[in-house]
Image 1 (cartoon, rainbow, N blue to C red):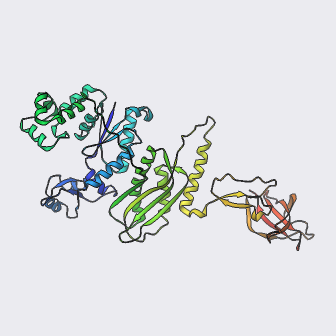
Image 2 (image 1 turned 90 degrees about the horizontal axis):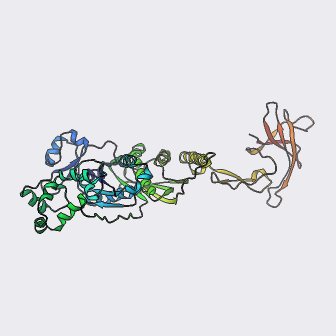
Image 3 (image 1 turned 60 degrees about the vertical axis):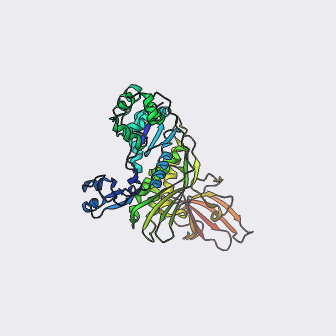
Length: 476
């Protein structure tokens, strides 16, 4: 087996700040009457703030400092959302201690083309989500977790080098209680190797089997079973913004991160979105909801971001935005793509639908539609609007123009009235007599006419009331 450990040392901070592209100096404070800096972001580090200093000293270094109390519930929730996202790399995943995910990736290497491509994709994906992770690969889950928590981003596939590196690690990395670690330090034990050299019976009597069990699992002397994590039915991603947003353009960055998270979860389930809902939370006001229906299921973050950007550009925010939520309101299972030896017709159709979705996002749902012929001889009633790409198109026995005028236009005729001026009759007549039953009856003779430039027109002559000629359509 081969385990990937992902450790998130800045998770207490990132649950508050990942919604901002360039967050202000921000720290996490410890509880108590004399709080200390638990962790801080890069902007705070540049001011001289360091973990462990008093909060009062941090305020002196950065007057506009943002301070948050550590929120264990939000950290656990974020870790579970990361686990749901990481299921796209392996179905075998477990939640570890101290903000660590453990994934068995040995069975996924062929799918991603090897270990390096898998790790590159996982790391780049986490960066898009806004999380900084330390990663390590080892033959044992506990060993990989210890390496990642130590900050040793190693890729070890054999047991011998793993044992060598683990022996030099500090005992503080173990998942043991503080009393056990303090007692080991008092007898001069500083590393895992020193601890393993002590008599096993004495260690078990004094510290219990838990210490020996963890060491054996890390070094591969004992099996390391991990309870698999089962993802809940997640079809939504939410983000509280670190500071209120007044402009639509400022929402694009956090929306991009939420899309990357949501699409990663759907990738693990082989699903695509057919309707996406974006909810903008305001303080003391009804949320603003933007619905985005799709012509085909998709989980492409770049494509969805383009559509949401177009849709957001057409709305006016009623108030500042405090939070953002993305929900896959409707999803559909995605079938595997079939590849054709003679070219990919599906890809061409997909490109057309992508264009339709972009036009609808910019112009509105009702502004873009398809046309289908219906069995009615009257040209004005022989078509109906349908969803773009709809295949229900009736066949026509006679040619019909692509462009039909909203109302027929009278034409000047020759003195004898046999034809319109400057036009010659190329084909016809096609006699249409219909509609007497609904009050829209017509009695017309239609002709195909052309001019000297080669353009073709659809013209007709009324057979009742007047002998005038009318233009009704233009052929492409």
